[in-house]
Amino acid sequence: MEMLRFRYRTLPLLLVALFMVGGFLGGWLILAGKSKEWIYLVLVLVILEIAFVILKDWKMGVYFVLLWLTFEDLPRKFLGNNLMVFFGKDLLMAWGYLSFFYWMKRTGQRMFRPPFGLALAVLVWYAVIQILNPNSPSLWYGLLGLRLYFYYLPLMFMGYAMMTSERDLLRFLQFHAGVAGVVAVLGLLQVLIGPHFLNPRVPPASLGLMYIMKQVPSTGAAFTRTTSVFVSDARFAWYLFIAMVLVLGGSAYVYLRKKKHAWLFYGSFILVVLALITNGVRNTLVFAGLTWLALAVLWPWGMGKGPNRHRVVRILQKIAVVAGLAFVGMFLLFPQKVGSYLAYYTATLSPWSPTSELWYRTWQYPVGNFLKAFRVFDWVFGEGLGTASLGVQYLATLFQVPTIGGVESGYGVLVVEMGLLGLILWISWSLSLLRSSWMVCKKLQNTPHFPLSVLIWAYLFILLIPKMYLGGIGSYQNYINNVYFWLLTGILFRLPAISKQGDE
Image (cartoon, rainbow, N blue to C red; front, top):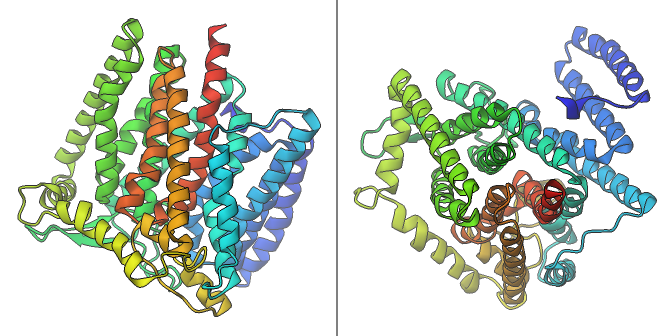
């Protein structure tokens, strides 16, 4: 792909030197029977190469960091929670931030000023104060929480700055469509080959069970929640949802702009849909279906009464038919494997099913967990930032600090960590972001960028509202979701300027 071509004279020489050194050292390690050390060496070389790319061009570096984030879990499956692998992305992102802000200062570019900046700034400062909460068992929890909530926030400014033209936008969409297609194919192969494909037979103790075997309540048929290159089925599912957003938005964009390589988006979308259906995570599939239904209304509404309205309707119809035929074909070829997923969804989501969990999962479970935060914890001041966040078990093991526990409710975790005021500030910021981003969508009405903008807005909305209510804080704090959340926010607010360039 054109975007991945190295444009610098010194970079190929450095890569050759690094691989020569790595080859000699790696050969010695393999002969010595130390294959795990060889993998570590390769990872170090990859980090050094990406760091050099970031130094030369922070925009290109963003693409490499996204690749690292997508495939980072694959070596972790076999190596365990090695700190070099786990924090490698944070080191790369810190290097990227330095390169970006130096570029901004050197070129005199204006920094993006988000319209929701005041609400966000108040929330960030309150979170910083919560690091010193006297109820917190350790300062480490506050630092962990600050990283999980806001470490990737600068990506919003980077996403805004890297989209300077239609070409930049198309490049980003093509890149993601290609990567998403590969990840989806690996997930589908896992369905057909078995759960041990891309998974070690004995998972590392630090990661626990990486794939979950489920049974259909009515028939007892067993199936696996696929993980693809990720360590968990939920992380894979939400990556697929992000992929659906960008691939579907990209397909509408290239169709309306009459760009080339539309087949890349259509093919990737079909693979993503098939992987979503056979992933086994219900809430992601439900959100994907509801998003699709919303698009059937929002896309024609946003495109007015001109020819583009009929074109977006045609896109929805065409992709729905092709994806439906692909699923039917997969079902006919592998009826037992695919049928177990369909039976599971029907038995647990249908309101008329005796084994339905719909009412429990949409009301009793989330409400009960949210109210637990007020009954068990200090809901006035909170227990301190990070005390109920994602990954506290690793922190407790690493630094030998006590754990507090938490609740499986996103809004409940906010109460546990930052008290009632923290919950109010979070909701205020969320509503401010969603309102201002929806205004951007309205500005893009009757343009080829409107379908993409609505899908990005839908992702922001689902992550901040329904997922915080139905699930835990992990949906937001998960690094894949969080990185794309901030990056796509910046891209969304840049779309009106790109649209004006295309009309001139």
